[in-house]
Image 1 (cartoon, rainbow, N blue to C red):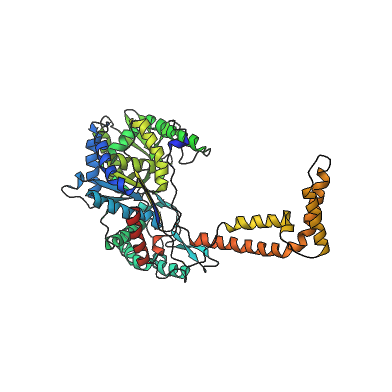
Image 2: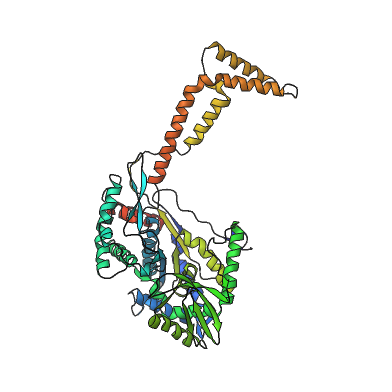
Length: 526
């Protein structure tokens, strides 16, 4: 089947019902997926500068587990299941993956690692909270830090310590009586403790959340993508892409072109932009910044004089003088990082490609990651000659426990039909004994019963329209009531949509309520 055919791509939707989950493949199939992926990974035929994929995979898993503090004598040989996300205060549907990860790793006797994507930008240092009352709520953005230039989480420290300290109180004030006892009050001392110990903002959030997970009984480990990208196995992986950048360019952009054609997407930046060429430079699928200038920019590369030139095309340029072997090239990349402070980080597509090829036996995506990783799979097929082993997809819908009136979302359609009936069939809605009303009803009845002909069509239409107009005063009270109800129902639907959003941060939920519901969803959905 052509990849330009939309049916070649999986479609996922978040569950609508509160307490519902999506797990694909289903829970009963996940342990077998782990085993089949292990067999598939062991047989993948690719050479990274003299290291087989299997050899590089073993080394990559070792360094990941070491970075996650989960390395034991046998850990690198055990099944490894993974998920990942930015170090944000995300909604419970994202957090659900960590709980599923824990359960799956126990089921297969393996290890679970959550990959913290600290290379992403911290754009808006705030969380949205519902405020007001249940009848007229609104959303308030509650800042946990002062706004600043968007930096990668790896580099994002705290700009306003006082604002960070007061965050729980301001969240509770915003929530008012809508949510009692939000979890943020218990979570935040751990955040502040981590910051005091030197953690950046994202690392502090992750430390606090992971501490809570352990208190709730989860047994998972965590590692930041920054540590992964600083490892020797990742440098070998990246060097292969940089040395074959022409090939990867073609594969990446063809995969995107097929996806856009299948989904009839005309915007060139969707789902992600193409890799570009500029003045002899090829854009690489990596970010770059330095200790001195932590502004994240695309990395560009070109081969020159037997070496490899790297640049951000904004004044930064670095040379790898010896790329005659992967050992030499990897050593040069390490020198850039640890001697010159140059940080090369994977973009999203490469992050999950590395994780699925060289780290995880199963990687659990959310809906967004699963959607766009189909581009990564196609790019891998074109570049390596094979796709990475299959992933899993999981999310859940958990809504804030805010009591509010339930609204019939089908009622606006009914009201519109009733209003249309009042306009075009008013005789059905009036029993007025008024002589003028009865005359209009009788006139319309006669004309409706008269067959339409070319000769009488215009007169017949005018007569029926005139009768309908004459009857409008007799249904005005009903129209006013329906119009008022339409406005009321629309307001109720807006309020319900705001209160029932699945996007609110997990720290807005009461702890016991969230824990009980999350465990129930994992038990049922997993």
